[in-house]
Image (cartoon, rainbow, N blue to C red):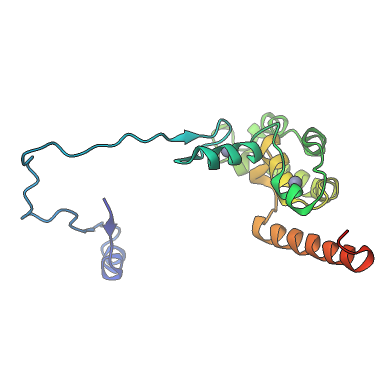
Length: 191
Ligand SMILES: [Zn+2]
Ligand SMILES: [Zn+2]
């Protein structure tokens, strides 16, 4: 159920020291009679397909198979983005080896707040710096492919610790690949 809070209510909250009032949107009109009338409703069973490597799911086997083959959490993924750009994708284990082992940073930092139950970020404060330092090498080895970079970050456990803007990287990669393609056309024809 959706709970809608008005600006006025938020203002009231502030005035009343955090007293919380909410408006609830009515979702079922009272007059409709939803009792079973005659025949049972028609039902339809549909398959839902789940990626073996991440939480993604969908109703189309074709699309989910395609997703799974390229899923950035799949250790044997085929990179659709490199493929589409006409590049040979870098070896994923090689890319992962360029990044720090995130798990190794955790134990070192547990003394930081004593409880060992702090947020991820403060539990691994040096990991971010380490990942930052590794990013240029990763980018070079991945030939700039954002999907390959993301896969390495994800599978090394460094994903939350990297400065990585997927949309920006993707745009740059596609633009570069396109320019290369046109250079090829200008130099050697479409052949
Ligand atoms: Zn997946
Ligand atoms: Zn790639």
